[in-house]
Image 1 (tube, rainbow, N blue to C red):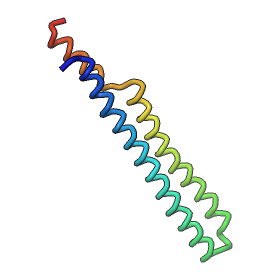
Image 2 (image 1 turned 135 degrees about the horizontal axis):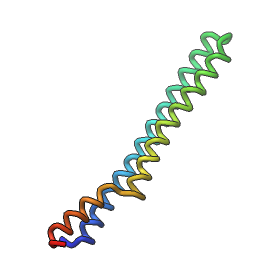
Image 3 (image 1 turned 30 degrees about the vertical axis):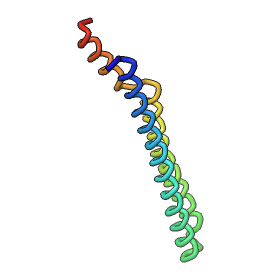
Image 4 (image 1 turned 120 degrees about the vertical axis):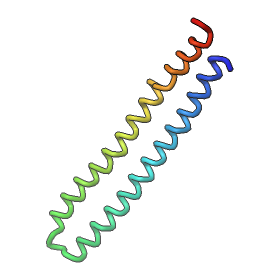
Length: 99
C-alpha cells in the first residue's frame, strides 16, 4: 500500500473517532445536565428554604460537567491537528523503503 493511502486511512479513522468523541461528550453532558436539573428541582420543591445553597452547588457541578466535555474536545482537536498516529506510519514506510 502506498504511503499516501496509509496516511489517508489513518486520517479517516481519526476523523471518525473524533466524531464519536464529540458525540459521546455531548450526550454525556446532556444527560448530566438533565439529571442535575431534575434533582435540583426535586430538592428545591422538597425544601424551598435551601434554594440558595442548592443553586450554588448546582452551578459548581454544572461547571464540572462542562469541564469534562471540554477536556474531551481538547483531546479530539489534538488528534485532528497533531495526529500522533501519523509518525509511526511514516517511520514504517521509510523503513520499508530503506530510506
